[in-house]
Amino acid sequence: MLSNLAASLFLTERDPDYYEGLVQSDGKTPVNPPKFRGRVVTTLHKAKEVRPLVEKCITIAKKALPHQDAATAFETTEERNSDGWRQWRNSDQWQKWNAALAPAVNARRRVFAILRDKEAVEILFEDIAPRFVERPGGYTRIMRLATPRLGDAGQRAILELVGKHDRVKQVSQKPAFEMDEEEAPNDQDEAVATAVADDAEPVEEEATTDEEE
Figure 1 (cartoon, rainbow, N blue to C red):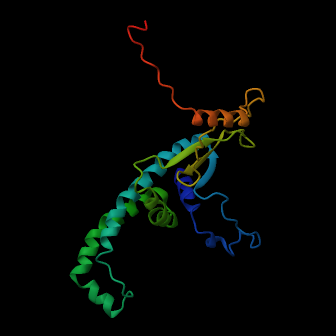
Figure 2: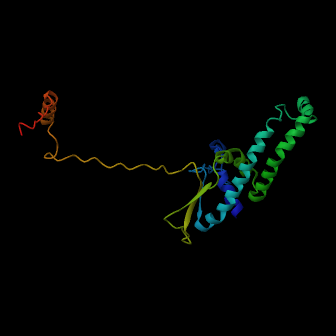
Figure 3: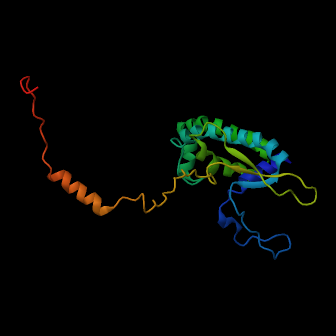
């Protein structure tokens, strides 16, 4: 159950073109894409149980990315079973490519043993893991829903991947209230006071002598 729930979370990241022409088992009802990608709605207890499993899969996939990048330096662009591909297959480049890619293949097998879904593993390694390369952890969040589930009144919650539906914090600004007419400065009086201050000459104090005192 937890493996299916974790795989379902990754499968919500499918390309929208995947659902074009897709129908349900009755052959008529179309299958609609998920309203929010990277999000599933389940019970609160299931979300808490599956969250460590999802975090583990993402961590394994993220650690395999450097090995995949290192293997691209030794791979070939020739078509499989062609003469160029056979020549590359028997060369030292294939040996280096195989050695560099081995940890990534092992990581995919470990994740497949958890999810049991090849498509979910492909989406995880190709789309989701590169998103969290710079993030040290905390790839998911759980948010409780106010309305319970119909039937058994179970507490519902949202389990989603961070980074897509993040809440943007806005700094609140203090509203500027209009000043009362009595307190508001008069523009004409202020202009006159400024002009008088500019035209006035500085007055030097006369020094007093001992005789005048």
